[in-house]
Image (cartoon, rainbow, N blue to C red; front, side, top):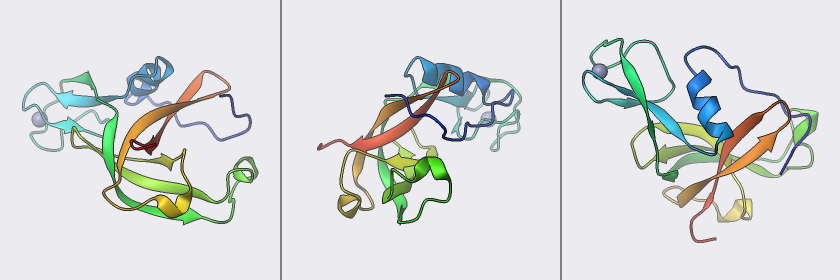
Length: 137
Ligand SMILES: [Zn+2]
């Protein structure tokens, strides 16, 4: 699916490997090589041990809705066709939380602790965004 006109994420040096993996439909987060802490968002220092070295681990793509809100108004023209849509904090099974959208179901069905699975939205300029859909369909 290609969606024109939506804003692109900022591709800074810390997050570049994340977005590169998204292009291949792999959800990756950083892991501190000193203490093993898995973290999001990416950063140059571990928030737990302040270690500077990290690698990237591929997540299962599964998680649960931690919190959410239903948008009934588009605050950017590119999202007008999406309203109402769900913006959620998804707690990945690996621990970190991501802000994303819940798609593939009526917004009224979304609830906290809902099991979700990553799905991908390919956008122009080689940007692929991780979204989440209910595991039960
Ligand atoms: Zn650490």
